[in-house]
Length: 98
Image 1 (cartoon, rainbow, N blue to C red):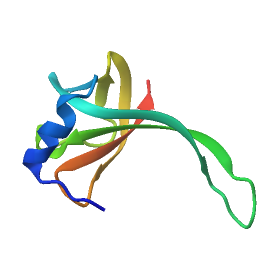
Image 2 (image 1 turned 120 degrees about the vertical axis):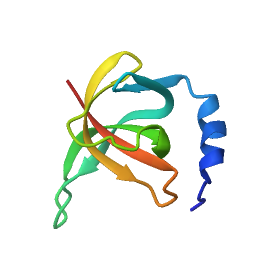
Image 3 (image 1 turned 180 degrees about the vertical axis):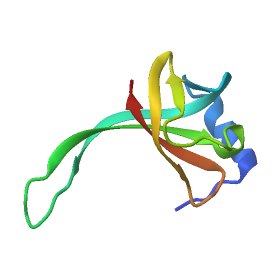
C-alpha cells in the first residue's frame, strides 16, 4: 500500500471531475458508486449491496461525522461512516442517498 503525504492529495484530487460539499465547503473528491457482495457466510451467496464512497482530504473536512448532510455532484447524501485512512491524509466517507 502506498501512503500519501498531505501535500500529494491536492495533486491527486486536482483532476477529479467530482466535488463534495459539506457545511458550505466545496472541495474535489474521488467518488465511486458500485455494487459489492456483503454478508457472505458459511458458503452462502451473500447479498449484493450498493456502496457509495467519497474519498476526501482529511484536513478539508476534519470534523465530518455520521449523519452529516453532504452533496456530491449536486446529489444529496448523508454520511454513514467516516473512516480515516492509514495515511491520515485522506478520509473515506461511506454515504447513503437521501
